[in-house]
Image (cartoon, rainbow over all chains, first blue to last red; front, side, top):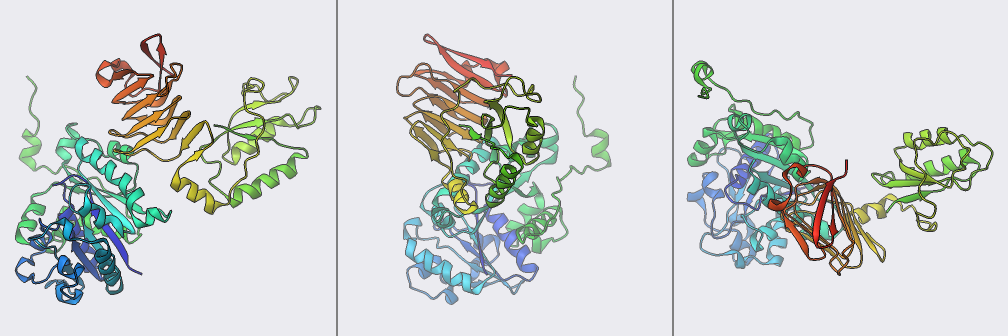
Length: 272
Length: 220
C-alpha cells in the first residue's frame, strides 16, 4: 500500500526541496521504491538537487494534460535504482495543474511506488493546496524562527481542512522536521528552542537537521546529502527521520555543537 | 460546559455500567470537566470518598460535587457547587468511539448558546460564534482569531486575537491559561500586546470591562 507524503512549509527557503530529495533517497537506499514529485511548476528545483536537470524531457504538466505518458516523464535515478523523479515544468505556471489531472497522476503513481513524495511549492495557493490534496501524511519543514513557525502553523490548519483525507473526516499524519538547526545559536538563545516550536505546533517531531555546509554542497553537486555523504551528521539525521516515517521508534538526537580544540579555547568572547 | 455524572444505587453496579461505557468510547472523558451529582445516593453515609477515588483512578476529572448531604464525610476537598449551578440534568448519550472521533474532527459541539472546540486554532483560522460563549481546548496561534458574542475561554496559550462581547455584551470576559495575545477586545474596547502589562505575559489571565476600561488580572 503506497503512502503519499507531502513535504510542505508555507514559507520559502526553509529546506523543503532539500528534505524531499534527502528523505526520498534515504527511503530508497533502504530498499523502498520511491518517486519524488516536483509540484513547484514554474520554479522547478528538485531536478537540480537530484542532479537530473539534463535528462528532463517530459514533465508533470505534460502528464497532467495528457500530452505524455507517466512512464515517459519519470526519470530513474542513476545511483539508486528504486528512486525516480517526476519533474515540474519550468515554462508553465501553477494554473496549468488541474485537479482531475493531479488526481489521475497520483493514483497511477500509487500503483507503481511504495512512497510518493510531493515537494510542495511555498505559499498557500493552488500549487501548495494541490500538492497536499491527496496526501496520507505530511512532513512540515520548519526553521526555528518565529516567521517559519507561524507559517507552518497555518499550513497545519490547511492540512486538517483542505486535504481529501480531512474532508472525509479522517486524520492526516503530520510530522515536524526542524531544519537549519544551529546548535551554537540555540545555546546562545538566538533561535527558538525545540521545545518552544513543538509546543506551538503540537505535532510529533520527525527529526532535527543541523544547519550544515555539507547540505549546501550536496545541493549544488546535484546529489541528496544521504547519497553524497551518507556518514555526515545531516545525512544521519535524514536516515533516522526516514526510519521514523516507516514507523520505527528512533530516539531524536539534538545536534550538539562540535568545536575543535582552538574553538574550545577561544570559542567564547569575554564580555567587557 | 461540564458533564454531570449522577451515580445511582447500587453503586458497584453503576460503576460497572460506567466502565462498560468508557470501554466503548475511551476518549469520551478525556480532558472533560465532570461534576458529580450525588443527590440519588441514600442518605445514610455512603462511601463517597471511595467512590471519588475510583472515579479518579478511571481518569475522570471531577471538578466539583452537588447534591451531597452535609453530614457526609470525604467531600471536604470538593467544594459543593451552588445549588442549581448546573442546568437541570440533561442526559448526554455516550457516543461510540467512531462518532466520537468524527466529532473531534469537526471539532464542534454546539448547542444554542455555546461552542466548544477541542482542537487548537491554527494561524490564519478564524472562529466566529455570535450566539454565545466559545471554549477552546487547546491553543490559539499567532495570526488566528476567536470571536464570540459572549465570553471566550481558552484552555491553552492565547497567542492570537480574542474578541468577546461582539453583540454588545459588555459583561463578557476573556479567559486564557497563558497570555501571549496579539490583541484582546471586549465590546469594542481593545488592547494590543504593547498595551498589556508585561508582567502578565505567559500567565493565566482574565480580562473584563470596567466601564470603558479593560482590566486584566492573573487567575492564579
